[in-house]
Length: 334
Image (cartoon, rainbow, N blue to C red):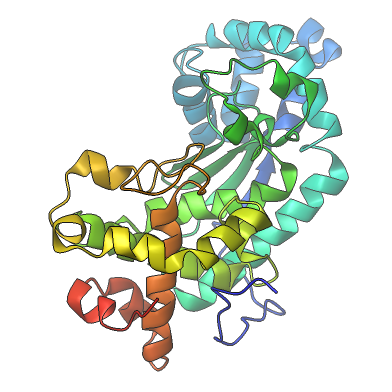
């Protein structure tokens, strides 16, 4: 049995929970299928097709055309010509999306998982603004793009670890460890975690040192687990079960690398970031190369799980606002 990070907090029920009217989901692939239809292109001018994009979702159209694809200004109808070129050049990717991450069965499943997660976080933080979800092709530019009222999910990043198109991606940008995580079953949890990190930036401690980073990530991961109670902990880390087992079995070894005062409170930013970066392994201290990456996230999760266990009566808002490292670290015993 694989142990660790199994919360004892009560399960948050989603039955009968209503999300705010501002929340919703949009499949941008459906929009593209309509706007790129042969009849649509033949019968509508460039300006008319540009207005279609503007009318469907002007906020996301601006993000997608200007920031995600960098196709051109959202207020310039000529940008539609660049979108047409994108659609022609990326046709294999778009067709692959339709049969993998964007297929009705997979997308319906991940939409339900993500909706339930937001229903749970809405109970924990009822005044927190929730985003509109947009499922999109990103041209392999962004897996997750949380910006203001939008949480965009790049369907091209989740077509399957062994999909032939993923294997053709440049290894410098898409090394093996990244390709292994480009799976459709990780879409919902990855999207929620990416949004949570941005939405809760105020939960970071004032110094941004190792202790603050551990506590911040730990708060995020305990919340992610509450919102995805049926997921295994290694899935929420984008790890394999074997990587999780290594971390649990070697928790004391990892802690010995972290606990010195000069590491915990006076670390060089570059050295701190190594504990939280994606990679083939965690390149920090004397950790062996067979360890999984982002062990700082794992340890932060363990630390905040211990703190939560010692303060079960604390409400969620107070818990998320807590940043006192000495107080929190006192509750942790590896």
